[in-house]
Image (cartoon, rainbow, N blue to C red):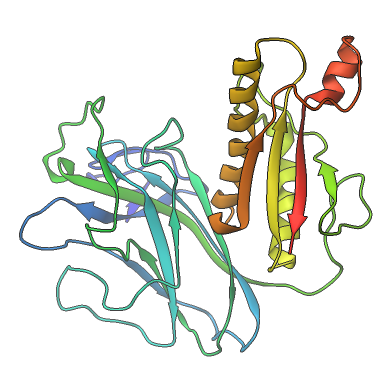
Length: 304
């Protein structure tokens, strides 16, 4: 555990594992999620007892925030959780004896977002009686994809062969029921129809989502959580400025950014498909800014 009140090497924001402010509050936990060793699998897990057992058939949002510590020399592609009716007291420091309820597996092992607080979210349908939450890497080194961080300046010997994650703001919240969620501008959503996502904006000539995009993307996450059998095709489109090659690539990357947001929120990657059409299919004709703004868009098509 790391906390602002610590006077030793477990402080916040500076500690033996690196430098990080808390996502919220004054402290956070830390666990080894990967350690490159030839003799054994070394893992650490964070486990807590819930305030009450989960109800059979109930839908619960499991949410926490994680980040790779800045002194870690390795990055990995996954982290997960287990909901169980029993706690597990491990005799050693190896692999957890029970598989994860869900593992988030990133498409990339290391990116510009690695090392930032990242939201983990997954909606779990309870069997009933689950009372303990365990967080960590439940995959062995054969399944876990790892990458050495060549530009790391860390000299911490305990993390020279490791991926160490900070964990903060852990929640298990009951959700579900109520009116089906919708997107802005559409009072009802159906499968096999095309919808333009409103208020989705990116940096100029880039695929980085701007903050004003997040409220609408949160609505999309709620739609997919509610309609659990739906899949979504995310299509990127650009205006007419620039070459075909540039616009095609940019549209694919922008659709990928939306997909990454959904995956970060706990939507399974198998439910998401991305496509990019560049400037091939404009909604309106014209080269004025109003027409171009209309043609720069992200479209959705839900499938069941």
